Length: 163
Image (cartoon, rainbow, N blue to C red):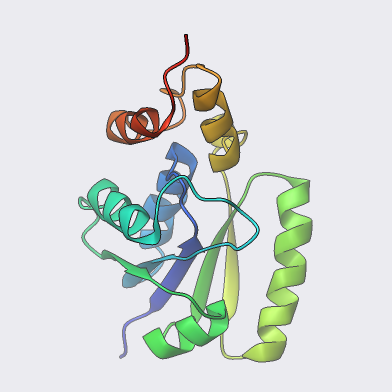
């Protein structure tokens, strides 16, 4: 029987504890989880594609069946190239669901062989968003509740000193 391959896509700029929760839970649902790091043209990234790939590799090193790859194409095309039949998406709330529901419908039109699984974020992690983590850090707030210590160091190294 072929391996069940899943893709968990995102920009991961930076990777948060919420992302890690979905990765850890998603890895239990498939034989091989590919964490696809991509660029979202609508966002201005704090870290380059290469830096984000390396950070995600570091943060997920302890998850045996997870691997990290960059991609810059349609998600369903990437999934097809990787032999994945499953896309895993995290949902924090109703707004995420509405967007993801529409995206899933479009993806099914593009490739009906790829299904999407939604995982609800752990209730304690629901408010975490990379965009907000960056904003909190820029204004001198404490981001330690939202990211690992290593990622906190990475983010703070990018934020201008406040005085």
